[in-house]
Length: 397
Ligand code: PLP
Ligand code: TYF
Image 1: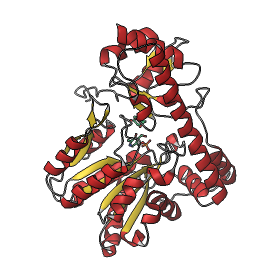
Image 2: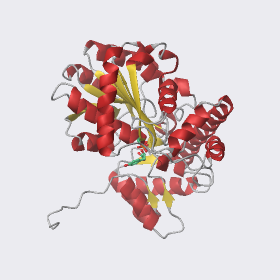
Image 3: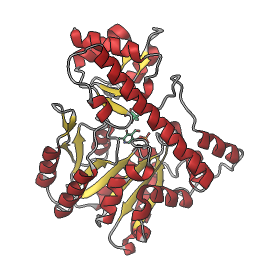
Image 4: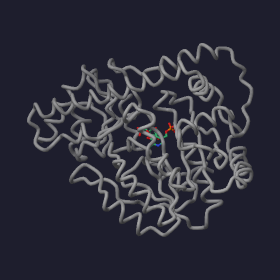
């Protein structure tokens, strides 16, 4: 019966992490998956989350509504859009989702069903690989737009603008809110302004993927610049929020999808369809993570604690960037390495090629993505010099 089932390829990120787990070398280093680790290399439960968890001990495990906790949904949209909301909430619908991935998936299904047939979803080159999987598995055509410039290890802004211009009007553009995964390269506010203007002329639809709000700069408002700009510019748009990274809720699968329309009269029908899809897929979302986020965001003291912790996490990553760059430069490794500190968020796109990566993995037990992406959270004072030594060797080989 099942003899014809072909083996699917492993996830390019989770596959590397699995290989790390199987490696028995005491020297091994995991800089693959984007999950925060503290200075001792340990996973970190945020104090604000711990406190919220204490308050929630014994909370009922009843089913949630299909679209999740209403207060959580409101707080999520408010967190992202902030002052830009300004009465626009009537034209927004938010549903609680299975984290950022679930929000993207429900959003892309909505696009397939209710946007004109053939609407293409444009994804940055490169991007988080799951963007492609989600479109493919949802039966939505996808294409790539120019983003990264390997020469400068920065943004190919002109190439991006050309692709926005040349895409058929009314295309969907998946844009990373901030802390672009995998490159760590974000447009400047001025570039965002130009992107928004051109997208408006072309009547494109922004789909903001918001997996790192607060993680790039440590400032929730600054990190939300692009989404607020698009909202203020009058777009109809989508946003997928993940609370995996900024609340450290990875396995709790906590997120939200918000769709903004021009006219509030469409909201009830839109919500009814979102609920229909959710109902047929998993009936209702999980309770715990959303309650945690709701508890933190509705208590000013816990919110302050959260903001402080975001600063600590993003600050440690910035610190690691500098240390890694200094260690590489100190070893006189050929090439320029300032991109490590210029890039932002959880990752650096090192520019190491697949052969060099293979040396790091095979010879040094240092696990990173074949693309050369390093998750900086996995680095700390105990392994940075080892990793820099290995990079020096790999580049010289
Ligand atoms: N989008 C990007 C760019 C990501 O890096 C991630 C991973 O954290 C996600 C979306 C969604 O992740 P999750 O489903 O864990 O919230
Ligand atoms: O890019 C990363 O490492 C994170 C975590 O299928 C992740 O976004 C990786 C792969 C995946 C889901 C999450």
